[in-house]
Length: 184
Image (cartoon, rainbow, N blue to C red; front, top):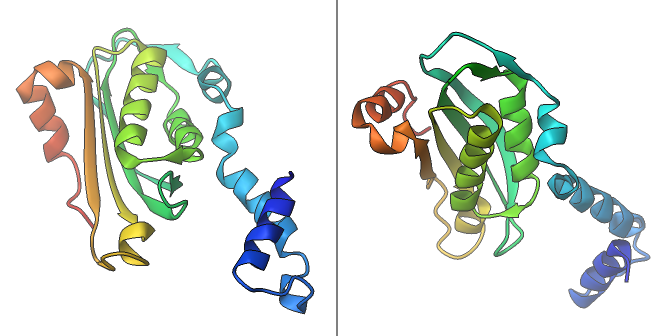
């Protein structure tokens, strides 16, 4: 069964008339949208980083803040969105700055939970850069908490993942945490 047919079945199951003018092309549009929102499955880390790892003598923390993202919760297929903050400690190599957003996007465009997304980004950056350490923090709002269930409109979730020196060195970890914005 095609994704388009699946959406037609869902709309029919909730009692809608697929011949109604506003719904005439909705199954096709919804299938295209869902394909886009899950396009991370068709990408690889090598593809999104595209050899943008460069030699560098810098050994101090590099921090990229406020990378916007949108994802879909694997439990309810509802959106969650927020900002990702990524730091790493280079060890002879740096990663092109746009690649942090591309890595985030690749993993966010998969059915996901925030905890896993945070860890995936950290591990991918560690793999690509061979950095001494990587830290990732995500602040986001989940529609499954806002639109259904407990209906808490102002709730946000913060997750962190540490790899290498960020996991073992409390001073490095503290430097990262102090450089970040408060939850929005």
